[in-house]
Length: 305
Image 1: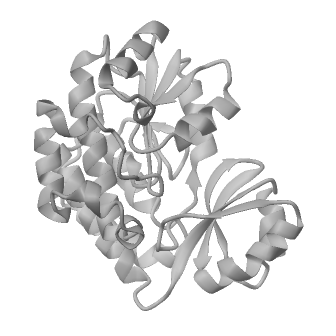
Image 2 (image 1 turned 45 degrees about the horizontal axis):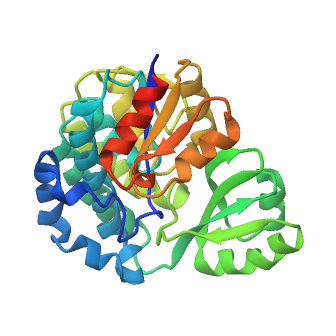
Image 3 (image 1 turned 60 degrees about the vertical axis):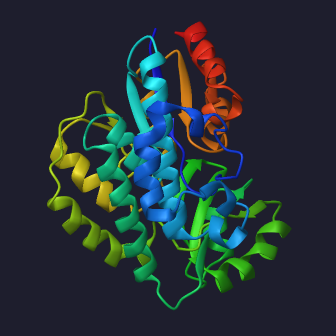
C-alpha cells in the first residue's frame, strides 16, 4: 500500500510546531541552514505576530522546518511516497523531498522567493483571505471593482483571495452578509495573483540558473494541478505559481488518482490534512504536527500502508 506526502504552506506556523524536531540529530543540517537566514531562536520569534507573518521569515521557516522533519522521518518509513505535493511555498520542500534540488538549495530559494514577492508589492499593503461557504464566482461578483483575485482553489465552496488590505476589509462585511466565513491569513503579500507577476519573472530567471534533477517520484504542481516528472515542466511550474491561481483542488485529485492508502502532511498545523479528509473521507490523512512524538506518526503511517 502506498502513501502521499503533502507539504504545508504559510499561515499555520506556531511556536509549538513539531516539538520533537530540535532534538533530532538528522534535522540539524536543515535547521542550521535555516538558522543562518532567520536566526536560531525561531520558536521565540514565532511568539511575535509581526515576525510570524513576515514573509521573509515565514517562507524560510516553513521550508527549513519541513525539510528538517523529512530528513528525520524518511529513514523510519517502510517505503518512499508514491506522490508528493506542496501548498504554495510548500512546493519548494516537495521538490527537495523528491530530489529535484537539495534541502540547502530549497531554503536559499525560499529566501529569494520571499524577497522577490516583497519587492513586487513594496510600499503597498496587500494580503490574503480564505472564504468558505460561497462559490468563487459569487465572491468575485460581491467584490466587483475591488481588484481581488482568486489565489487558491480548494473546493467549489472554499477559496483564498488576494488583494489590497483595503479591498479585503471592504469586501468582508459583504461576504459575511451572504453567509460566508472569512478568515484573514497571516500572509502580508497578495500571493498567487497578478500582483506577483514581476516576482514570477524574476524567480524564473533564478530557477533557470539552477540544475533540476528528475524527481524520484511524481509531483502534483500548483500551477497546473497535474503530476509532472520532467525537469523543464517542474521549473516552469515553480515560477508560474507565484502569479497564478494555485490549483489545490486539482492537486488533491491528481494525488487521489495514484490510489494512495493515506496522506501525511509535513509542516505546521493540519490545514492540508483537514482539506483532504473533507474531500476524501475514506482515505485517512494526518499532519505530522498533530503528533507530540515522531514515533506516533511513524506508527500511524505503518498501520495504513
